[in-house]
Length: 360
Image 1 (cartoon, one colour):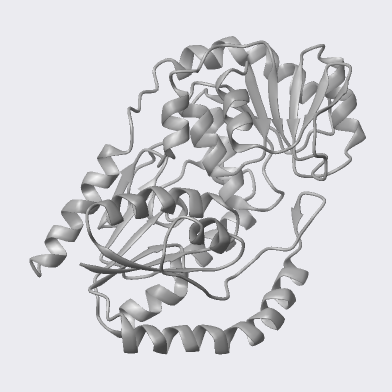
Image 2 (tube, helix red, strand yellow; image 1 turned 90 degrees about the vertical axis):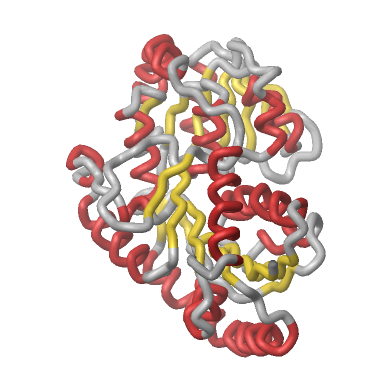
């Protein structure tokens, strides 16, 4: 079967999740053309043959906040340059590929192609949970304004797909038809790391804001070894300052540090959070301000008892209180079970069978 697969390029989580599904599709003998925006293009192009770059939406971040005005103008200006490129890619697909169906990981251009050509469209992402499930009041009220904006955006992004496969480690009630919840999609390296997982003595800290002397002082005061990624992005080798170890990024090293950690301190991104839950690692999540999807992830982490939510790390008590809760989080996580990606990949195969039979 010929499949057009779209991947949004904002953040790398979408690309890492899509990589797993794409590898499965290719292994099953399907012919796949991939449309992707942003830095996710290089990641996927190194693993698959037919990868085309298109313009995609991006966020402008400053001081752990989404800058809405700058984000709007940046996307408008870059969008004017990106539209001809996307139109060219669009017509190239019409001429050369002629897909049988579309799979979209929150990517709009492939979705529009599918709608225009009346093709079955399968949405696979974690974002649709905002629009297609009923969220509890205690989560929404953290930032109700951001929730309303996010819900409207998600609802308008990919409406009227044939089916929505939503990846999640929490399970709110489904409120819209053709919606199905699945555990997070995990890359093979994380599945393999389950064998390495043990309760270590160090904290894994992933923080993309460079500098942040206040956080460094708070981490130093814990007395625990902290393996820190992202705060000194330009370094080529480890820098040790007391109990703080600033590490250059290495996928293998990062995964090993995650699997053997005592706990994790990071943002509110879904991918790392899902990996931490799978490996039974308590996590303190600090979402981007006013980015409701991250607020949702972080708050649900706390609701499930798997970790804690903190709006900022300006107050050192947030980390100390989280560390006191680690044993209770470990007990809750011990009841979370996920073996692999078999459930969602099997559902994808069944969807493709229905497309082939003309009943999707």
